[in-house]
Length: 246
Image 1 (cartoon, rainbow, N blue to C red):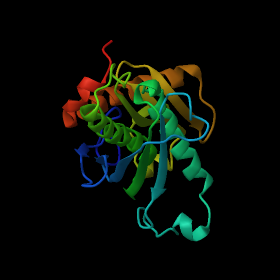
Image 2: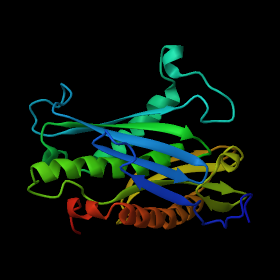
Image 3: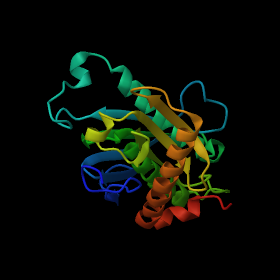
Image 4: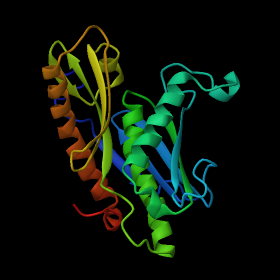
């Protein structure tokens, strides 16, 4: 048993609240254990210069943590005058993951920006942000579809993300902060509902790991992905009409 009583392949309790923000075109609040992330989606009828004229849309993300999202207050990055490298890396990951699961040509020349704000952090903020951002994105795209129906479903599949780790040879699913800070191997996995891998971020925090360990981690992560996707679909069943059939 782990410190919080979970088994090795057990997720923390998850709740998705779709439409949490009254003004944004799409929004989703995710509670994943003690990690809480609010994602809002904004639709703009323009695209970045490097996409202009291609006939396709663009999806990007911004990520940030509130000053008291952690045990100690941290300075707002605006007060520092620049974003930290970790922030830039995470928001690029979120944007890449979302774009990979969407047919951007279907969107036309419009942009959707996902603002991912960590209200409370207890590990797994980037993976929680991806899972919530996908539902916020779906909500925004559904509003576009209802105003002017798409010729084909814009989403290739459902998408979620989860963290896993290796401790003394044992794979652990969905790390909280205490586990993450002492883990031997840390891995974040982004995967579709049909088990297509979008991105893997893996690091040997306190040593190396072999291929057998990597496959064990992916197997455990897949169990988590299946559960998260099932909860996404239950939280926003309207999104099914936007997803291409296998």
